[in-house]
Image 1 (cartoon, rainbow, N blue to C red):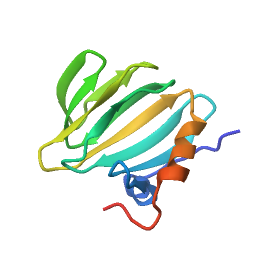
Image 2: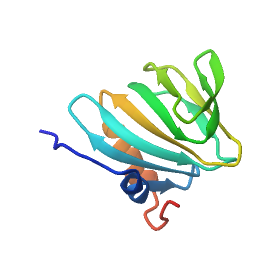
Image 3: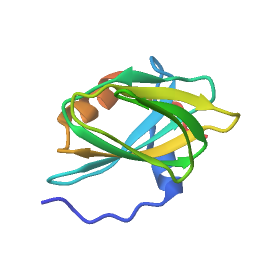
Image 4: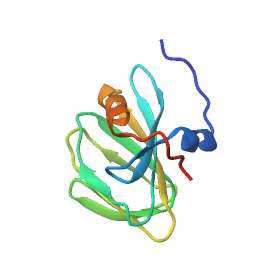
Length: 129
């Protein structure tokens, strides 16, 4: 059974893993029976590559601005804005402005592939800023 969790923004940043092949910081905050919460930070100039996966994604931009595409929709978003990418729908975008984009993703159902990706592509010797 999953354990309850309360996690600060500082803790999410400090435990994120740098993904050198893609140039961003990413970490799993917690995984439950039905959902998984992750945290990401993209510096200006680092693209949030177009991608899709077999689980749903709900995301909230906490900091920064992005030009985001989800399926056929493209919009500029700012801190406090959110998006939903159904399973199999391509999504991604670009950080706009000079501030990093920081966002939370909620995946449903949880995906073991997320943990495997972090394990095989992450670099533990770089601490997020």
